[in-house]
Image 1 (cartoon, rainbow, N blue to C red):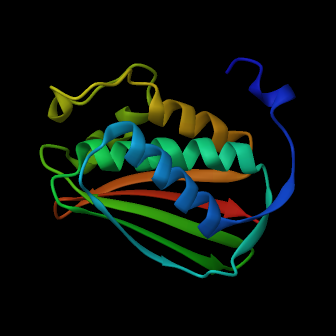
Image 2: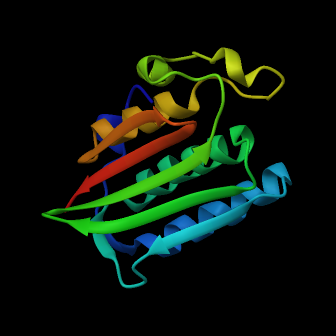
Length: 155
């Protein structure tokens, strides 16, 4: 991760829905939890950027949502905005305040509400690091018992 700024930059065109679906299948196989993915994504949403970085970011966000969601559904939306694409991952949560979301991107931080779940405390830090060097912005919020992880990708 220390060398990511110089060795991880590669731009290519990729379909956002394909990346999300592929990463969802991987995390479902890894964790074998019975959750459903609900998507609202334009099937023709193609962007140019670092596909590998987006794959890692989505895998970590979907993995967190799958492991820590209290509900049976994980919701993902993706929409084109003015010179950007906004991808949002949402899941039901408990015991996490919006004021604490800034801590979630700290290296090795684990929230009190995740006891009993395996993890290193690196997933969201990796997401933040990749977003910082790949024209993406990660925003984490909690509102009314829903955890939102938004990635804004500059196109």
